[in-house]
Image 1: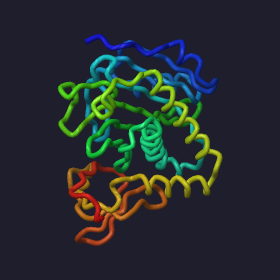
Image 2: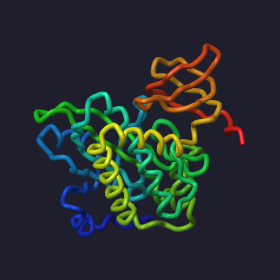
Image 3: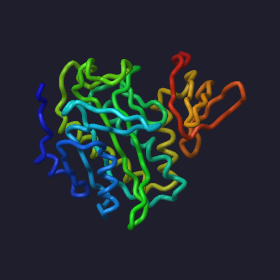
Length: 264
């Protein structure tokens, strides 16, 4: 099945602070974007792959997306906020993608901590933010993988979905990418310039849209252990607060499994 390519002319007309490079294929857009950042690429550089052959996610997972069935892209950012605020960037990205999808008519879009985007109970997008050292200082690479027209047979796991499966029609990938990039840049700029008030607003907005809060969860931690309990909130640096048998624990990294829905 031959799917439509991205419209390079439309992407070239984006806001001047965004420069989009479209690749026919790449193992990982995050890896390419990191190379561009090390070579001096400015903030706002975007790398998009029509076919990503070895995408990377949290806990070193890899996957391949069918050609032109998804949006796989990475955005180079060079935050100037204090280093202690950087952990909010993955949450900002997930929250913004979910909010943008809701604005596009996908009312069921929510975010699962820290930044998986769901439609109902199924994952439609994953986000990986990586810190890269460059000669011009540290950069953040924000990688997004969004299933757009993937069929049920093309999805990597049963608990996944695509915009087409959820909406009944195949969206225009170029139009979706344009809205995502504009929304991400706008949200990032507001966070960058807004200081502590912007971070407090982000924390409140993220918490209101995070479907993890209020649920019984299992968090698979990077060291191989698991934490079970009830997710009760997000702390001041974006960590998940879980109350379990041993009391209250804050989690900075991990894979969340929702055990049951929150109390109604």
